Length: 315
Ligand SMILES: [Zn+2]
Image (cartoon, protein in one colour):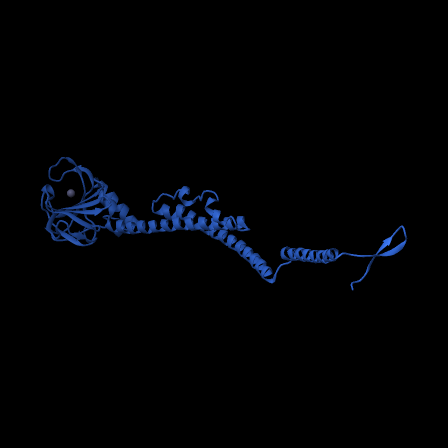
């Protein structure tokens, strides 16, 4: 026996017993059930989207920390960029200038990475802008560091060349002891022919047999009889420099031989057109003859150098 239900009849003003069919009863139960499930589902969805699970709370926390880290990283890269800017400026204006190397053009120093297409794979990330700008800055710094590193490699090469050049150019006196210049560089009355002639080197008097030194590292271009120069040595120092030693008594080097600055290559004599023992010394720079006294700078004080230069041009 189920509970009886009543209906209030407003006309008769009495409660009348209502009789339900089985179908109606089943429907009533089903209705309750559907409403219950519906409310359950709604509550479940609300919970799903509004209230975080412990795992979600953990992930959110980690995400916030990552964002903070990204911010720190981004500022660090800015600092590196400043240091790099400073290095680049010093490189262009000081180091490269010292070695006569041109500054590196801005187009090479400051690479462009052509919009954000390159970073398309990052588009799905929630903090897209921060991630892209940080990645972009890192790419720029990396590229600029690569360029800078190459510049230093180039400078090391130039330095090596400069050292080699310094060791090769004729820069000492070819004879030991004090210089006795008997004839300077330039137009003068020829001691033997008696007419005005260009004197293409300087004549340094010394006793016969006095050693003659190579004035810079190089290779022997020729060593032998050379007309009016008599026994003569010509050295090729590279970098456009050559030196010549004339009127020698003995020749101590052979063609093709490598010589070092200060190495004994010949002895003083008076072979060829000469009226006394002396070495006729010439310096050639890129095919043009020059005043050799200009190249004595390595073993002279500035005062001595000026005096020698004066004597060499006025005697
Ligand atoms: Zn001479």
